[in-house]
Image (cartoon, rainbow, N blue to C red; front, side, top):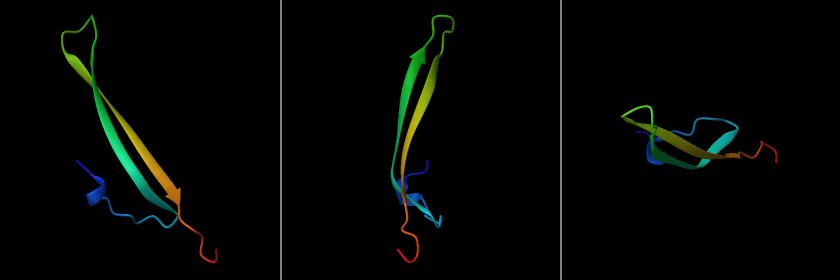
Length: 52
């Protein structure tokens, strides 16, 4: 997978401050198998503009 340590910050306007992912298993009564729901939380911070 891609962790923060392998992320390359190449955007001129934004920087990635934090990144988390969480997986939840869901079982539905109509289906015998479990399904995964993956939630991502990304926090970006705007970089200072040149001249600021």
